[in-house]
Length: 133
Length: 134
Image 1: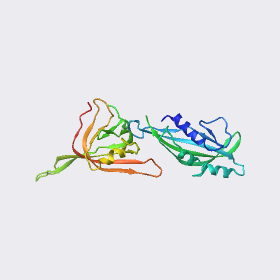
Image 2: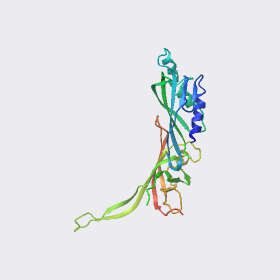
Image 3: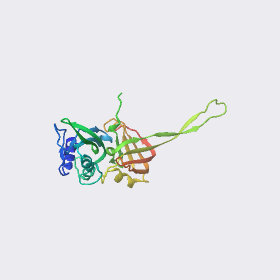
Image 4: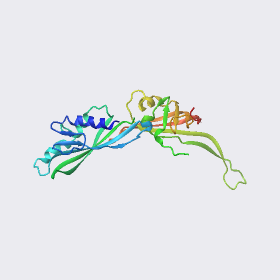
């Protein structure tokens, strides 16, 4: 798998979510709502002869300030398992040539500070399988 | 002498190279044991008998229509295809085990949180030719 091609393909797919700003690499600053594709952990040689590699790619979603009254409602739409803004549904509905399969395996809530402001965020973990060579 | 990594192992069944779908293979070979103890012995005496063996392989399922594990192995159930296993990978002088074996099982395993896996079990038919690769 070409990791850059994988990230580019997933960023393009995430960009189909209306109003979501997608960064294919960690940006200097983030304006919510935004998804940031982070750096992948790679497991090589899942089968003989460079047949299959696997990636574990974190995607960080930043949606709203913690203090914002509607923060929860906003972020829940992205974390839900289905719907037009569901990260899992949108990612897994894509058609890709850069890899064979993707599963959004988990989403973990967190609070991150950007420019001194606390934002609600979720870290999604994507499990990606593709050809080794 | 050098330690050899398993990632370069080559496995072919009925001339089809399944290596890129395979993550594990095992070739346990056995011999019958006959007890030839007689009066006067103070310990069991043993004599070797017929050789035997099995072969198992498993890996990650691939939907490749012609050369994927399902396409290759499922039609071979109950038959005795040729199997080649190259423990150190392909290369002149490297070890190779070539044999025919009865395919007794092909299994696909679908866990909800994992890739689809497959496995196959063989019983070796006759001798194993362990002549190194030409």
